[in-house]
Picture 1 (cartoon, helix red, strand yellow):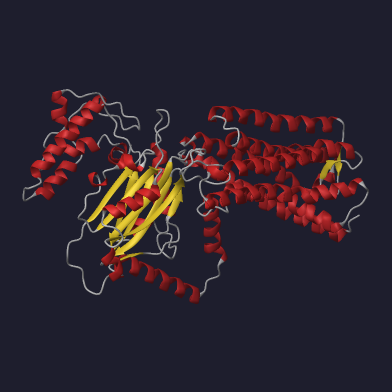
Picture 2 (cartoon, rainbow, N blue to C red; picture 1 turned 60 degrees about the horizontal axis):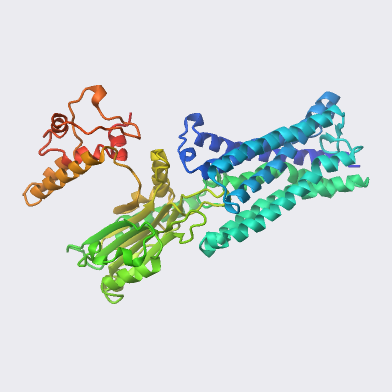
Length: 605
């Protein structure tokens, strides 16, 4: 029997552990609901691939269950103030604590069905309803039966199943816990084996295994000492240290789940960034030395990135940088030859962005040889992805930069250090984010200028459904989460360099009838060629890019929605649309007004 001091310590610990779990689960719940469009948020993430939608919903349900269980553990011995209140506390703890255990098993089952059994998103979505019914309904029925049998009483720490009913404790709770432990262990082994080849690289395998170990470890740790304590009570024995560990770890399961599923262990997760910001802003005492060091670091960083990178003399010659992006569509090396058709010789720096590349090493070597070999051009590269298709990969997202070797050796061209040069934005596997979509970056200095190059492959439309919002989120994360400097200033990467080059398969659509769009492309190209040799071609080209000023009635104007339904225009309408409202007609501007991103910028409402 615990002394009064020990009881007070147990209750204090229950309050602290439960409060931490409630705050952690509430943070994850708020973030996910905001992603669904609540609280004025954007539902862009939930318009993404079905695996991501399902995973976020599973985590959202787990967070709500954790909050419900923790809020009743928080009450501690207050449940013993009356029989009715004790029955209520015992009923709610039995219901939601057991629901948390069962839901962990359901999440493991969802992972197993997806990665091992390869079930379709539709099948997996239906399983969620079954899992909810089993978890909420099944656990609720068990709790109701125990309430009807009047089995709830004060149980040392809080009200739960009375110590007089050890068989009910075991079969209605701990037997289910042990089964779930065993099943989750089986899933861990099965998924790890299935993903050995599917992840495609050792780093991804390591991340997957780490997340799976955390998933299992946190679940076991949360309930291990509770199981030991209840087992000792079965034999009419109890030890304070075991009681303390029980009350310390069991209410913390919401905190553990928030860390793992909320993404504290993932470098650019929203939860981790929020916590880092909180501690940086509120928990670091002001220090003149620290502020001085921070100011010196930021000043040196901004100076080096915005103009100090230069060779011994001011560069006053022309240099040519050639950029190209190419979605290979899983093509082999022979299918992309001849390289000269899309990589002409004669430039000083080549920036090549590839998507869905299944022959990365061979192509990189072939390009370097095409440009003259290592003696002429030095190669730099960065990539994410895999050549294995089992988890939805279609090849690498790669960025290759080739610079003249003489410039590299003289120091005129040099790569710059970066803290985070890739952002994975692919399928959410529950335990880590895949790299089948995302971005890679390469910062460098060239003579007296600095460059940030970002190559990307953004979300594509899915079965006719526009994912414009998700593409915008991908772009936002690409710019905000890439840290292309040796100190993280919190500024977007494009603000820290003289020049930022973004290229890749961004999947933004030009909406309209193909015949009309091709006609506009042909007319704009013809007009471009006509003004290329004129003296005032710069101002005229601005006219080509200018937005059109159509003289349409309101009901005839193109819709600003994501999916434009633009009919083929009649000749009078077309002439009105490209009327010479600028120094020359807005030939390209007409076409750009059908491109979804440009149009949304021009017509935000």
